[in-house]
Image 1 (cartoon, rainbow, N blue to C red):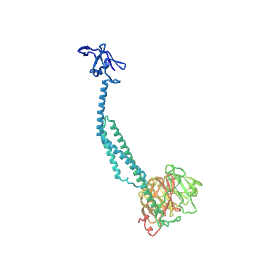
Image 2: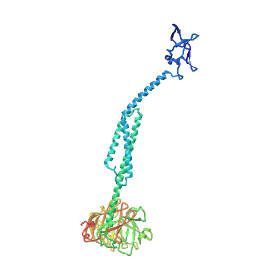
Image 3: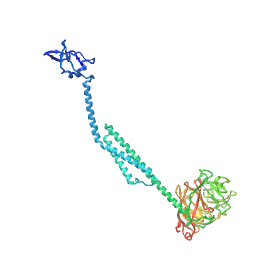
Image 4: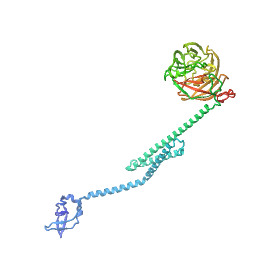
Length: 509
């Protein structure tokens, strides 16, 4: 309860029973707390119309009741204004939410698209081995791509409308949609890559099966190929195929000696089984050391060998025929012969018209001007001349005197060839198709003087075939492949009356 002494306010006149009374404020007590006049200005209107009475001492007394908590009207007004502002802001927010309802709709569509992509990802993972799925059409991928592009364009438009605004909730929605678009793009790209990878794997499997089928046709057709061909025999048709490579080992001087030659004695001596390895120096030209092995087992185990130094060989065109090594004498166009039993230079003879010093060498194999070869018909040398315009020339030479017995000129350009070998008097030429495959594409038959074009693939372990030597004893190729010793089996067609009138693979000359 409030108790007033002289209850009124300064400069205010009141009347009581028709008498003018000057009212002077003293104090107000509320719950034993005194308040000054200045503190009570805010509640004046609340008490101005309250009825009063006169006590025994003649004091004007009025009584009224207020709540226990004292709240100034000014603060009440502030609270009311704040409430009105909150209502206005709520209505504004509500209108903006209604305005950007498409954002909510787009967010829902984005979530559905993400779920769809996840289902596709699971289907792709579970069906990758089958080679086909119901979701692998180009049309569906294109439709998904267009859908993502549409979402991105709408997102850009909406961001442009709200940029710089104070609506943080709308910006948050747009940010979530942008993150979902990015995630969807990543998933779509992953699925596309997976689909392409699955297609590539399937194509590789199909290609491998086709190759196996070709191998079966090559090696499992006893009606076409020769079986158990005896040493030194030419009772067969033309070359039919080449086996897969068999890597024997790295050459004995090491990996840095990439150029060189190796093989078996091509002389038809059934009691001898001489193997030889001749790496060139690391410069790929100079031939100075070689090793001899009495058996293939000794070669593989690096045992029971003879190592010799010679010091005047040029290039990797050397071969061994009847216990002698034939090679190009260094820096000249001369043929040279060394007796392997004594490591003695026996003969040195110029080859008429032959170019040298890396003139018209093989493609990718420098310093191979003279390329010696031995087969069932004897000793040969393959080279080029200026007269024949750099095309291949093949001569049969006398192994004892190095005299040229007969020469054949071909129409195949020597620098367009990666290597050659002789088998039963037929010159076969190779060219590189890739770093892992060669093609035997050309043949010149010295027995008939006719040339043929064919296509027999030869797989290789490394890029360059530095030398190729054929042995008539086992009908194998001995290839020096960037420092590694590699062997191939040759498969020939069965000889028939028809095959004697046709070229390789049945192509008429």
